Length: 230
Image 1 (cartoon, rainbow, N blue to C red):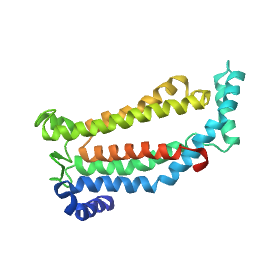
Image 2 (tube, rainbow, N blue to C red; image 1 turned 45 degrees about the vertical axis):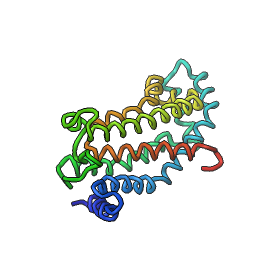
Image 3 (cartoon, helix red, strand yellow; image 1 turned 90 degrees about the vertical axis):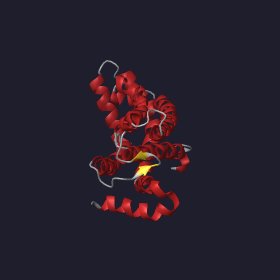
Image 4 (tube, one colour; image 1 turned 180 degrees about the vertical axis):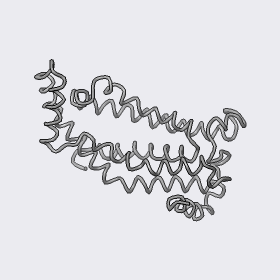
């Protein structure tokens, strides 16, 4: 058993008096919060970079007008501007990349039959939504657990979608010029992809995703509330 899996098991033991049969599910939530807290400094750095890109948006708009007929030159000019201002276009990706090992831990631990017998209420942590539909249906005991998770994800995704669209509007042509107009339109919709993830991965991994997604929404609301606070 890996160090992380052992940590989850120990957390489950500590939480058992409070959560009983769902103690492992509660441990996954706590573990996720610890992971997100550990990468929070990088999230703060990403927020500073985002605000810097917002500040540079007028200059990027000028570059778009100047190099309207030369997309390659426009892209180079935008990258040069970011380099001059010490703004990394990839800073926002680091927190997500560092969380990937923890997500795959949950996926492999439970999809491989590890720690079997653990559940969130009536839904086995190693099971998937398809399993819940096959044993009790959409409104069965396990199905209701998934409906609750879907409701949380949908609410968070809607909030994230609106916030992302607003931020991209503030950035104006900067992000669209750097990534392409088509990609710029798709990015806000990616928040809803979490619904698909929750539906197809083991419930343990889905819990990690839901908790992390909710943390991200709350964290971004805090970090982007005022420029002077980051």
